[in-house]
Amino acid sequence: MFPPRYTLIHHIRPCFRGYAKKVKAAKGVAAVTKSKELPVETDTNKLVNFCCVNYKIGENPIPLRPDSEYPQWLWSLRTDRRPPPLNELDRNTYYFWRRVRRENVKHWKHLAALDGWPRKDHHSVEDHPTRFYGDWAIIANDWFHSQSVKCIK
Image (cartoon, rainbow, N blue to C red; front, side, top):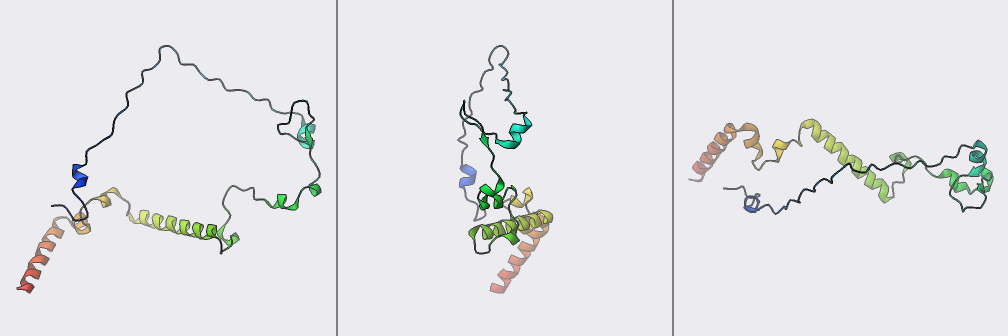
């Protein structure tokens, strides 16, 4: 009746989803939230010479120092949001192999999509020949089983 990989539980399983009650709309016009306008620093001298971050009220802004006074590693930090290319990564790291695996999966999924593999008609419980050959597959299957019965006798 059912193919062996498809159990009876899939047909008997009831739906246990409960639906929430609809919320009634409040009477009158809903309050519109106003966006706050934050102050923007426009003084060019202050923007160039000082670190414009939050500082305590009453204190002077933090002055910027020359580049030579900052640690050297600060200038080698990656500021690009894109991940680094694979040829820049160390092959002995977990991150490198995770990226390789992810790229490989993306590649295979792309090829499968080109072939039409992830279509919805491929997710049925029927076997492959029945899906694609229909009645011809049934006729061929019956003939094959009749031939195998003759061989056994």
